[in-house]
Length: 100
Image (tube, rainbow, N blue to C red; front, side, top):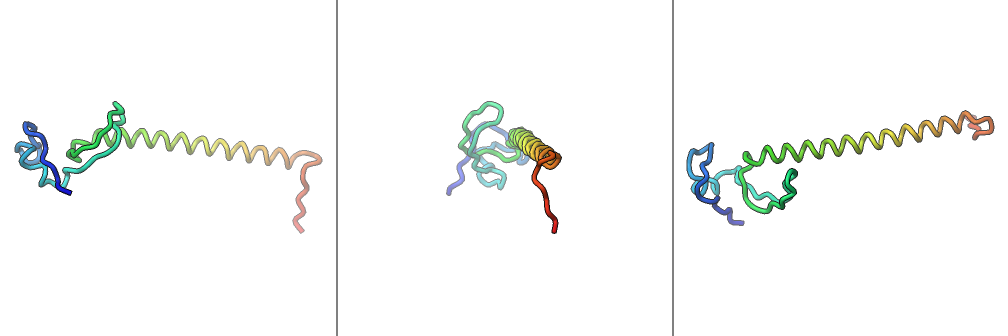
């Protein structure tokens, strides 16, 4: 795949040169596909990985919150199941456990 040049006019903070002359040679010039986590804008183009860091950090924070919520839901389900199992064992006519 041929790496495209960046649009003219932007100045690369690393190389202090017009982006159109340096980005296609830079290892941080990368293809990005997905959605912007803040605007839901579809992204399908070449961008600087360093310039993408703030957007990727926002996406990572959103995914971490989502994972935390899923883990908490799982934890609550396990606690409810354990409490129900404990209640069944405490019933006078509950299932008997024979350990022989």
